[in-house]
Image (cartoon, rainbow, N blue to C red; front, side, top):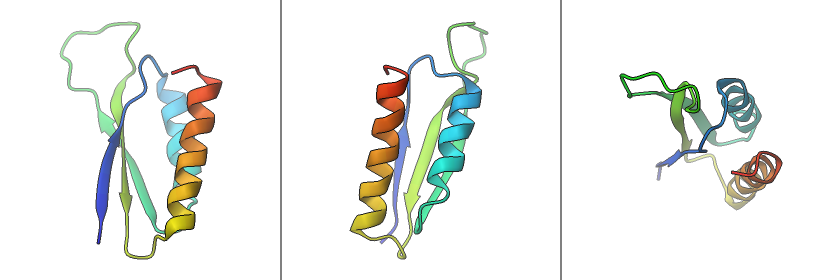
Amino acid sequence: METKEKIEFTNLPLAVYREIVAHLSQVQGVEVGLIPQSSQEFDYNQSQVAGLWIEYTPESDSQSRQRVEQILGYYQQRYSV
């Protein structure tokens, strides 16, 4: 069963989103990508992306999901989001 989740971090720069995607894409059974920003107005305080999506493939297991939670937790703590 595939499960797709949307993850958003407020005021997180594009470079950090890309770092998270690179980090998560190394986890077995996980696919991840960026969600483009849909706002038509530029706001310097907003990220250039709306968030990221994570999809668990049939190859994922509880260890994969736990690793994803650890990675996301790390970034939440590091960037206080």
